[in-house]
Length: 286
Image (cartoon, rainbow, N blue to C red; front, side):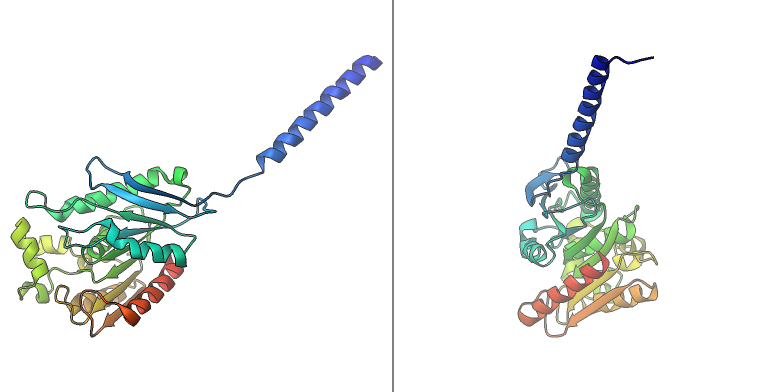
């Protein structure tokens, strides 16, 4: 069919218009603005007042951005996420490409034993992060850093409750690891006595093993870095020494540091040593 000149001109105008629009649209679509730094406080992951976390999202993050979760100590009965803020600030400065989550969890009372309540809270928090990973623009790969009771919870959850293998590393600072340790059972250690006296905790071997990270280690457990004080009145040195041996026995990558003259925490050069080693371990495994 012969196309008349006016029709041909109109057809060419239409074709040119289509290509022009397509080219402009493509150009606009590929302009992606980098994400800015963002922080949110007291994000609820459950219905209870204590079930909240703070999240610090780095700039230029992507769906591959890893997450470090901080868990405070306090003997399972006290404590608050704000005590982990120095760790949060250090991590933000030294590892600016990592997202940081600092959590609260429900504190134990005589009517609410710590186990499994606090493990359930960590599960709920992790699930909340995974559900919102697209909104936050983060990955579903996590690391844990815990202090004292928070370290015990971090290790226990990672070894026994990380069903989908989301945890890449764990950092334990003076964390209890084994409640069947003779150093606990054969002495009046205040940590175990408080658990038993306050909560009427089952002292059977089966139960104590179920809440002991030491007894939950497997060949697939997350790489773990351990820090302990040689004169700690609350957490016996054997908790770290035996844990290192157990992780090594199962072929789990680990690192262990004992500060012989320090107790349930330290400052100065030893604290600097802890932060340097912790950063290197995170960079290697997270």
